[in-house]
Image (cartoon, rainbow, N blue to C red; front, side, top):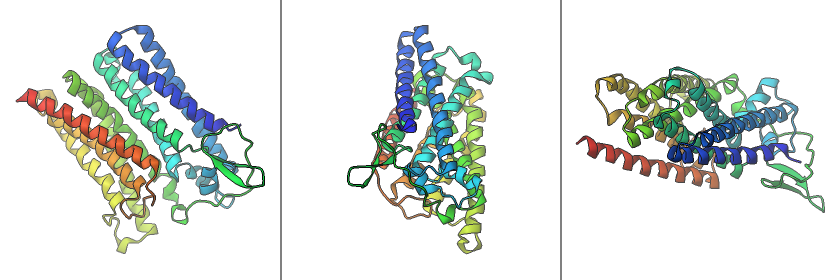
Length: 353
């Protein structure tokens, strides 16, 4: 039985339940509904945590019956490369990103100076939007399960299954290992730092959307600290990536070459920097339109950077060179974000006129 695959399914079901109940609570204000939503959210975070630990364990012991392990881990890798292989491919990086979002959402609700907003509609809608974003990532994990595994059919042929968790897995004694370009000490640091920055953009975006819907100026109390975290880790991620590229690729003795994917990570950094400047004036009643627009734009640009990397539409040393069904889901998600955010921003613009 494929326990990891079942964990991903359970996580999606729990995430869907938590999101649905949070939306229901926003309208009916029934405390029991909110309690159920929070329990489902905590359970979802727990199952994703278990899934990450399990996949890391499989990477470490080289259980190559799982396609992701077979593609990215091998016996010739040292222990830290085996662990780093967790985020060497699409499925593992999405798994890590999803876990970061869920952990940050829990931290936002139970720690910090925003706890006094716990029972406000602003916090409720921020939580609902954040859960909805996490649900999209959980859907991507279901569609491209990191625990897809090989099994043997009659006749001795190996088949890869992304859906059947109840077949007997075929034990493969070796893995093909990590891409040679990724066998660098920066691999252990750069991707998780970058994904941590990407994930932290979720909460400022959700708070900004909450403000556009409710016209509640307290949204900056939620967004400000998380945008600082996003900016810090994105800055570190871009900088570390530059060192890595300098060591491995050379790039003509430069740290920066305007690689398409590299540049797509710089654009949300510029937008978030602009937001951090704008939000210092919101307490004086300024930038009521510009500040939420920059917070929304920063997150949309992060998703755009993700689409560029996953779609292979632009040639880059970072990108996967295939336009998959998952890339189409990201494209739909990106289009939905752009359209819905534009409508809300236009509504705010007209209200301020």
